Amino acid sequence: MTTVAPPAPNPLLIDLPDELVGPRVLARRYRDGDGPAVEAAVAESRERLIAAHMPWVKEWDEPNQGAIFVRRCQAKWAAREDLTLGLWERASGA
Image 1: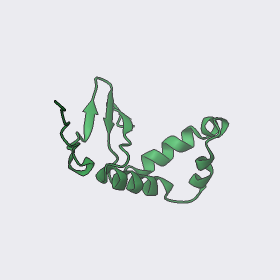
Image 2: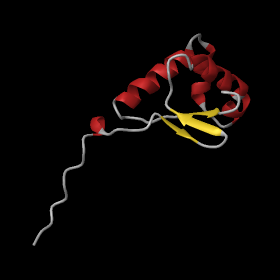
Image 3: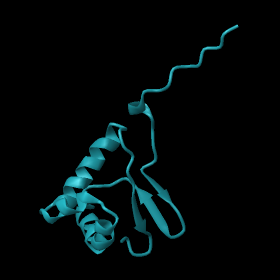
Image 4: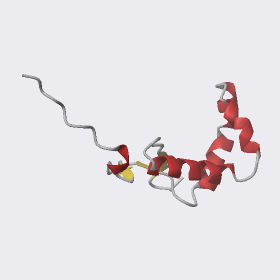
């Protein structure tokens, strides 16, 4: 007797939580308005990112790269193509 596995659900129909909350950290999908915080995080870590051979860092010299990144993440999240989360300190929101 052969057992047939049920078909995998369509990724677009999978419900996912928008955020995961820990005692000190909040992991959540990116939202409108997160661009400046993402830009600040990249700027703060710029030298380490360059040292780690992350070539995309050079693109962040152009204005609005944080907002562009956030929009791309939102689109990919909605399509269930990439589930990127931002990590936020709960106490400060940074």
